[in-house]
Length: 333
Image 1 (cartoon, rainbow, N blue to C red):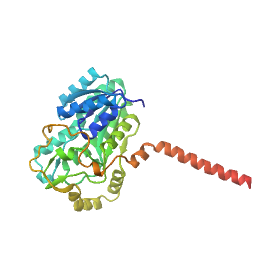
Image 2 (image 1 turned 60 degrees about the horizontal axis):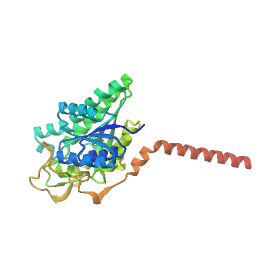
Image 3 (image 1 turned 135 degrees about the vertical axis):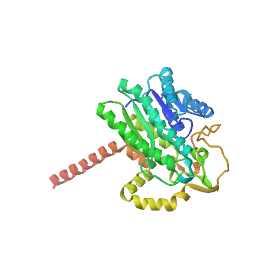
Image 4 (image 1 turned 45 degrees about the vertical axis):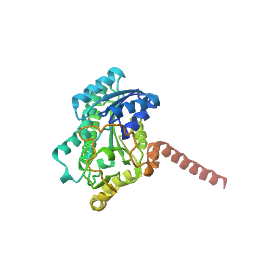
């Protein structure tokens, strides 16, 4: 597929969204940047422009369906028809379920899950009449396998998985050329661990192995420009989902023993630090979190997954060469 001309990214001001905005900008795309924080949005827009793209920053809370619709209209008016919509915005609470209030759980669900619903609706309302376009839902290994201390996030990602499958089936039923795909990501070095609400005694961290957000960005761009119903990123993601399919009860017990410690650094949490559950934390934190020294910049598994057609062709060619060689050797005898 050709490079998209206009892309919308929710949660574009940091982490995966920030890295993905730069990646699409480097392709020369117009990039609609949807997020809440003005400081970070301005910084992201500058980076997209420097990369070669045409940025448009639109301050938007994706939990507000009307705001998402207005943002989509503004993008089309100023940048042109939307080719790709990336649902990426999220927020969460790190805590045992029993320590999360109903209001906190509702807010995390509205942003992380309903934000995807509202974004997809705004995108499809524009893409379906043109019979073209791609919706990319940014998921996680946690869309299939829940872990302790992240019940709002895991629940939302499970919901996104089911929602995406449902919409995909409807698009196929209608014979539409619009498609929806999901990218299941591994643990990433993003600022969410600095700004998400947490009641943990120690600072939150991603469960190793950890990857840089640019790995996720490459996966999102690839999923937007290739026909794949779902793309899984990172060997740990593939292994976790395989283990969950084979022995989910065993994985329950393993995570019950290790899941608390593996998600905390051991450093004491900062009391009363600001968080982004209800409003953005002022300032700009960029795409990376505080784990650069532990994060991988590449995923061999992703490379293999995105080159599997070429690898299969090479394997067939190699096998054919062996067969022909043996036949030639037989004739020579």
